[in-house]
Image 1 (tube, rainbow, N blue to C red):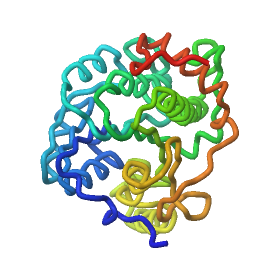
Image 2: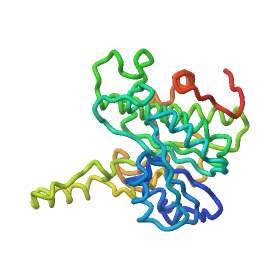
Image 3: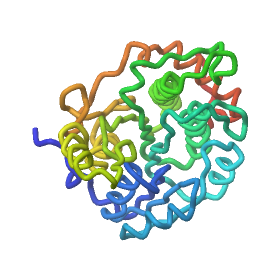
Image 4: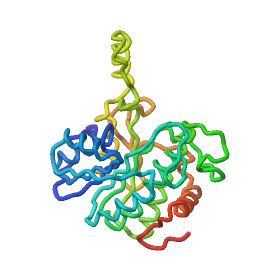
Length: 298
């Protein structure tokens, strides 16, 4: 089988794609590819100026709209502003290991942004979505666990990497439960997930002051890291390939760090359906946003 590449993304004329966090990195590459295939692309970003800078590097039908995933009011305003059909929703935006912080609604910043923000956004937009919801997770989900006694790190000593792992595990549990509910509702929409492997986006920075060290860093980056364009391929694969709901895509190389995208395995915790259902219920309670297509029980 020929490895999936950008050339495998089909003609997207007449379709609308929403990409969160598309002002840089993987999201920017994802948005650029869809726009180049003729899609109408809505770049949903917290900083509109940075979104406009990203749009200037692309060609096609691209609109920048403000969306702060760390603020439920902003998420509702964004959803209310979209009254058109949406073919693909790409839940790409995310924070990785910042210092302890809180969203506008008091949630731990990574859990609140990476999971709860996209949870609320997806459910608010779901009546308009026609094809697919793709949520970007991470191999860090394997180290994550869901602590229902302290989801928002109010009692535990804060550990940024553990909080990140929890949020990325939540992305996969969300995808699984969303697909269960879509199937139960007889919806044709499917939910998939992806991870980029190890992508050289904003994680690797050159000092500009030590040429020898920078040269070594460039060499190591080329050997160990994927470019942001290659890192976006699993997201594109999960968005357009003929795959079943609840599929999870990632790089095919060693330890899923780099390589052409394929379907990959997830951790045992990410396959726990009981935890996925409980997390969904808690997420509805925290955000005040419910699954909109039908009442699903059991």
